[in-house]
Amino acid sequence: MGKYFKYAIGEILLVVIGILIALQINNWNESRIAKNEEKTILKNINKEFLQNKKVIEKTYEDFKKGHHSIKTVMSLIGKSEKEILKYNIDSVLYTSLETGSFRPSENTISDLIQSGRLQLLQNENLKHLIYQWTRNLKSSDVRYKRLEQKVDNELMPYLSKNYAVKDIDMYGTLKWKTKSPLKINKLKIFQDIEFENIMDDYLYRAIVAQNGLNELASIIDNIIQETTTKND
View 1 (cartoon, rainbow, N blue to C red):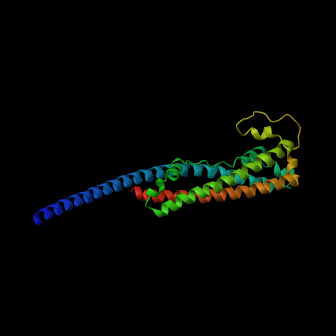
View 2 (view 1 turned 90 degrees about the vertical axis):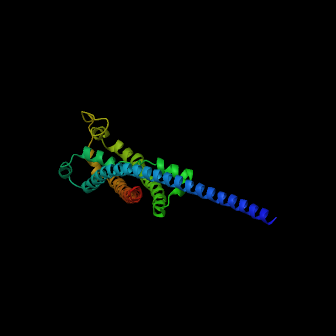
């Protein structure tokens, strides 16, 4: 009986050891798969944000031009016609209306959050940056919408009543070859308090939106840095 029990215990130990080895191999295999998936995720994030960096740099350049033109318009309010006519007002107004828009790629980040695979990332700082990115992007969208609403609901209706919009469109998509044949004193808007108030609030919203772009640009750089380090 003693030999039988020893044999039985030995068999049980072999089975237990076999199970433990199998579990260890399975855990190792799952860990390897998770690490490989994490590497793929990091590469995708890096690629996506390198693209977003190019997009935001182009947006920022457009924004700076628009911002500069709005300030130019504000500086001419109340000035004499001689001072105003030193500028191509049609072109300045067109540029002031073109503050750009930031439409980044969100495919990788959205998929990670929705699928729950974001937890595969071991870099806690990177996860924090991604959450910060999603929050700031929503905030930036709100700021841009407020800017666009100012143009659509106030500035363009005002210009439609007090300016020759066709002359502005000569520098836009329509590219008119001739100005409006209608007689209108376009410069009178620079003596109108309503126009000054509209442009003042428009400039404020533009600066707020630009600050949002600055925050997003900083996050993009940090995410690229974190993912580049991991890829290396």
